Length: 97
Image (tube, rainbow, N blue to C red; front, side, top):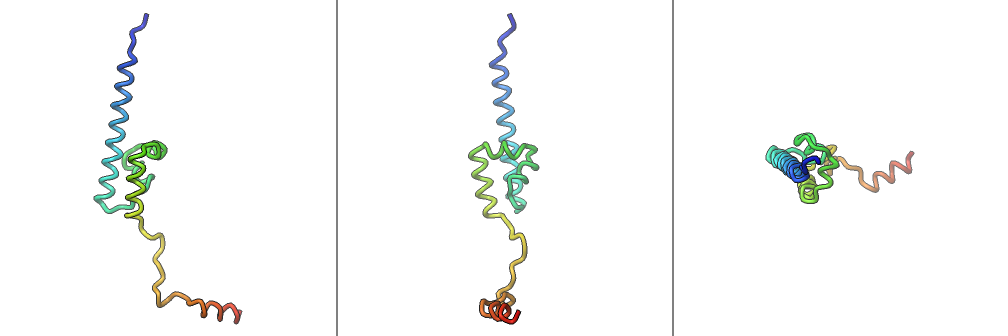
């Protein structure tokens, strides 16, 4: 009868899970310290884990969402107020066209 190594397999899985969590948390902290934009993809790449794994960790997911909201950069520069078209100007342009 083969030896029962179930406990050793469970312990190895736990250790692997904790190591993966530590890598993800460290990547989060490094991105935050570097003032980089925090996204699931950025954390996954930095920690060498999958995005789906990150989504399945409630505490890590919540931290990424929180940091993403505070570190997200605008995708394009906003138009200064003096250069924006006013509603009346837009209506005039439309009428002329």
